[in-house]
Length: 152
Image (cartoon, rainbow, N blue to C red; front, side, top):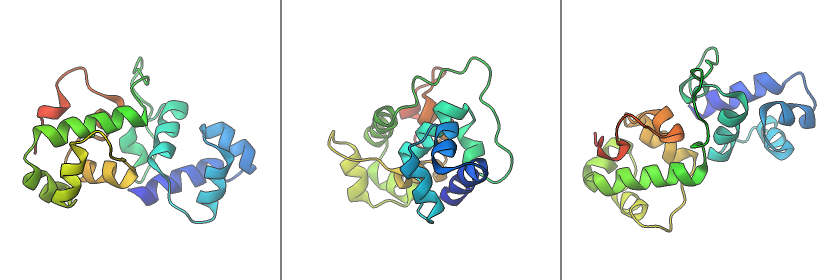
């Protein structure tokens, strides 16, 4: 998924200078330089792309065409701190051993996500997506149901 995300950014910015490509996709020029050098994107990269391009997280994390967000979709919830909060809610609501097994993260890591002082990166986000949590709900939030009660 991380490689698909990097591939989309590289395809979108290929015909532009570093500065031009960065402006087009809503990232910092250093992000584009790093991707062009072969480094992988971060959660901040994903957040910036969703906010600027208004495409679905699922389409950014998979091969194929980028799909636009539904009309009227609010992107105010697309913030790293809110993604962290959503992961923290899931970690507190679910059994740590089951969540660790589902995500492939260690149980110690899952316990850390229950506290306030932890960092969430793209690998954590992708682990939760791989465990069956909605990529859109983790990034955009959910108004239909509480994400934290959806233990897998």
